[in-house]
Image (cartoon, rainbow, N blue to C red; front, side, top):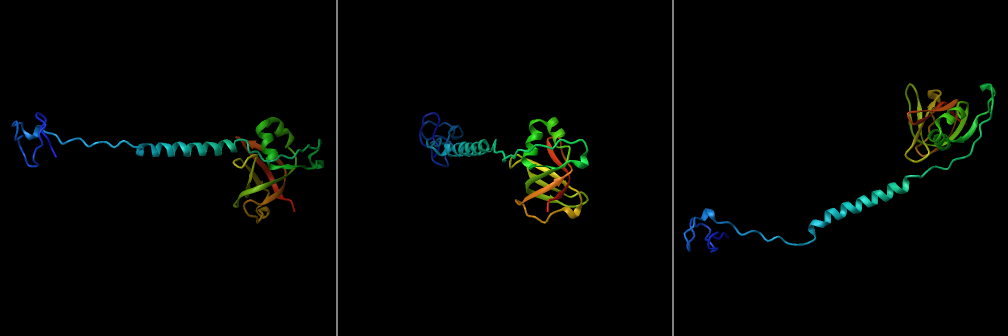
Length: 182
């Protein structure tokens, strides 16, 4: 219901002028709605804060979730044909390239036998496997020697590969010329 702005008298719904003072009804205003005070406006911000805390705790717990690394010592050799492959894990190779790329390039520029967990496989002209690296979120690419070497294994399966060498390009560790160890 509207009221007169001059004398505060309630106006009938169809009034054009105030019956008490004669002020035009166009100058009258409807009473303002009373705002309810409550906690309704705090629910959404509180939910956002809780969600951000949960995401932060999850990411914090995963920051150093490194895979176990087996120690491996390469066999020194001068002729690559006589070199016995270094046995290690894919996570160890990935960690070595992250920590000291130059030393890892020298260390793994020879045959290597690595065990890792399959994330995905890609066929085609150059078949390859994606393997879990030093953490669940780091991948190592294993380029297979030929299409016939592509194993019929499911995601999450453990595989051992015999590779010619390992390198890293733009932070991605790559195993070259790999064949599954039978």
